[in-house]
Amino acid sequence: MYFYDDAGSRLFQQIMALPEYYPTRTEFAIFREHGAAIAAALAPAAGGEFALVELGAGDGAKTKLLLRELLRTGTAFTYAPVDISAGAMTGLVTALRQELPSLHVAPVVADYATALGQLRTRPGSKAVLFLGSNIGNFGPAERLDFLRQLAAPLAPADRLLIGFDLQKDPRRIRAAYDDAQGVTAAFNLNLLTRFNRELGADFDLAHWQHYTDYNPLTGAVRSFLVSARAQQVHFDALDETVDFAAWEVIHTENSYKFTLPQIHELAAEAGLRVVTYFTDAATDFADVVLAIHEE
Image 1 (spheres, rainbow, N blue to C red):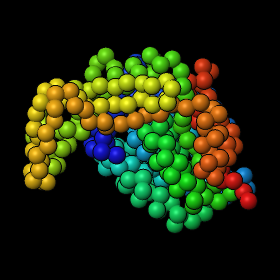
Image 2 (image 1 turned 90 degrees about the vertical axis):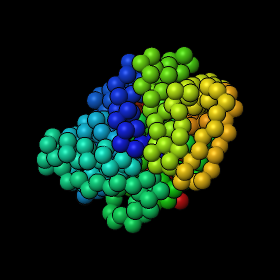
Image 3 (image 1 turned 60 degrees about the vertical axis):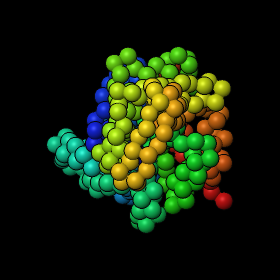
């Protein structure tokens, strides 16, 4: 979550438009092609109003396709976008009021843990969106715990829609996290800028580099910040100085890629079942509809 201050959110919007970064375009194509079927899979089968809760809403570009489909069919619902960035949320709500004035929006500026707590107390039917392959940012144990937390407040008629980036050409995956223009590097390095601003640190960004690798055996993309020389960094807010050796790294992020059998196995471990899923023509990405296992 520390990536997504206002500057980080703006940089990620730029990342999503990069030629190397296929996940956003691919998931957008899935929503464009299968929007009606996705809307039908999320709306309560018995009818009635429901809440469409989106964790990590960002700019909502893909979700707007779904929102338009639900509005077109006259479905009664409230859209509750959740994002940790107040700036991103302000931009999204403003855009929605202009583009979809009839939409009922109940925005939440919070982290996932807070949003999940609120989800438990939200009355009525709900569908929860977690798009953009964000599930891949969790390690295996945290991923399972997070899915169990998502499943806990759900009734049998409720639905989850989760985006999973699928395993593919390893070179293509790695390039998506190390673009030629250096936008992903700026996104990663923005963490150091936040340390400087918010904790009074004195990181010299000229002596740090972005590095990423991809392991096709584990499906993990790992991002690092690399110290290009031996250096010390002082944190005023902590009254602490940290030594970094030359070429020592800070591991900043994981982004796991999945196979469809792994998704079924993960769902079962979390007490969920796969209802259906939607992929692009090349099977690069899957949007998976899940429900809790009924006893």
